[in-house]
Length: 304
Image (cartoon, rainbow, N blue to C red; front, side, top):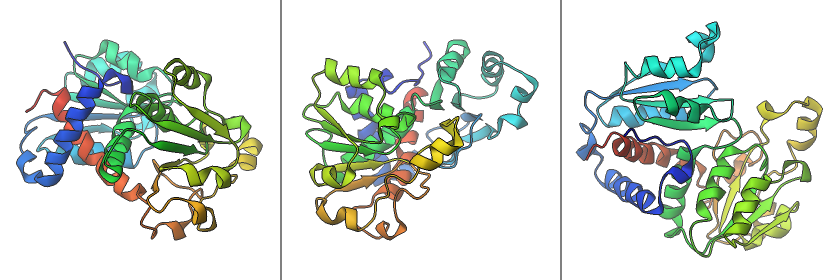
């Protein structure tokens, strides 16, 4: 039976622990994995722009000794001629061993997995899920905090359309003792389906519009940009985009061991003078993305 990763909860906690263990091994001795996926091919189907996700997947496969093919723009594929996702994935299943898909429409990755004879990895579908970014975030938190339990995790910015925060909160709620602080304008609050899951699991959370007051409580601060591409109203985007800008004055009351994350790209929600702060971990986070994706590719391809 072909295994896919469409939703972060397609993986059990034990399987995530396994991916973290393999990632640690890769970090310690990357040369041991250089032929793990020799003769295997990764197909990238990116209907939306991407830098880190696409390149980290390609770098991961190349580090494992495999090769890559695909497209980074829907206009350069047969989608521009009206080809369906079902037909595209049926076709590329003949050419590769594992496929990665990013699409602006929610449910597209699930649709692709239903017609694919090779593993499908969701690299972001609309505003819903981005499971491999969550794996990246989990590895980063585990490496820098030493635990995935008992943390106060602040999430700030666009919580309505931010698929990275939906996936992160959806999975981190499974670890005991975690609490969430959601910071956003009222127009961009966390979707009800996420809040319902937290309530169902009796996971503590608060919602606020004030980052200055909340930051002192946080062990992890996950900043996000307001996503222009998800807005239908340009005036509304302009009004909301600069509400939260993390700068040195805002960090004055933060914990000395706060971990600052961001899925990137950054627009202006984190001031560049924060980059030199030892608490800033978002570029390390991007680097960990390649490592955890190496572990995931090997798992889905059943490579030891």
